[in-house]
Image (cartoon, rainbow, N blue to C red; front, side, top):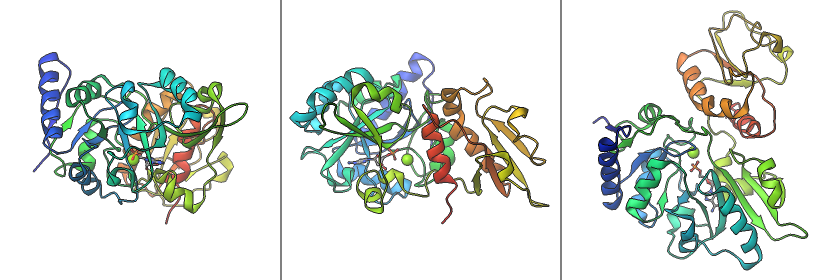
Length: 343
Ligand code: AMP
Ligand code: MG
């Protein structure tokens, strides 16, 4: 059976959608919901049987822990124990960035089921700023586990139609909230005490950037090892966010030599001829991430949509231009590198 999508544009339909979502969540079922990052597949985080349905629908391995969303930042201590030594910086970070796309990894409280944290002693927590998500979680008044609403390892959905393409018939309901505001998954950090400043480690780059976090501590990117991947940020697994079409990330135009007879599509950063990528071959399709002349937040909003659209063309290869590695460019380059890895 096909999964229904409920609209939320007008107040009466919005109230109906919110009620339906809360009803299903309360009954231990799962629902796809809009957030400001990407669409999430939601379940009551404190109900292990409900959370198990997320893993089943996504075909997600159970060693990959989920992010827990709270109805309000005041409820952080219902799921996490904030160590005294980092209390001050945690308060500063959540005052500044919540609700918003910043996830904190903190020691977990016993009420958080093991299936949510993949058995880890820590829990990843955030508060979403999406108005529809907010109404639903406040209606439920419980924490919600909500990983991206896609099949494991595939491209994250930033629209209700993308969720449908990923999970049609596998989930009972999709709530439509339009296109996601940021378009990239939340930044995940862990925090350790440090002198003179706390140490903030970025486990997954995202909309809250190194530059944003610098004010609050010494910021570092995680140095990845196989063990880190399993225990620290499993969403960082090598081949993630992968389109079915092989993807090649270039560092400069001369890195690419087209093969006669092969079909190529191009993911261009700003679509400028002077950058030297548009004419490399007779591309079957060229899609521009930031037609606004190279603005990283604009590129981020369009990133997964363009990746998904180019993937559907069925070319032999997606060629991707590189982006600046600062701000949100760091997260997109990270995802392009992962997408370009083939097993
Ligand atoms: P997503 O599928 O986008 O919701 O992301 C969930 C990701 O959050 C996981 O794949 C991990 O990278 C990260 N995560 C969740 N819980 C933890 C945790 N306890 N420690 C570290 N990272 C976590
Ligand atoms: Mg995901």
